Length: 128
Image (spheres, rainbow, N blue to C red):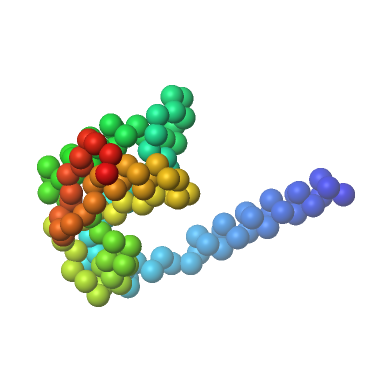
């Protein structure tokens, strides 16, 4: 019984995949004026050797300073959405920074890079 249910599911997935190939992509209506916007996602800014989901505070500062030196402009999520929906023109070198899970270390270290202007801030090496 379980085997036949699995076979049925596999056939269903194959059929769905085949039907999806028959549906033409919406390329004709695709917007070409939307720039590629890098989205950098950070999980935790801390020292945790062996944990690939974290970045050290020093490496994070180095990355933020690199973005500043390269004249990137940070976006708010609202600005990002407005650009994608055509309500706002993108700056020359936009970047969106995101932090998942709301760890305190994200706030603690990202605060050193508070954005008081419209451009990418430089990070301080001392705690805010």
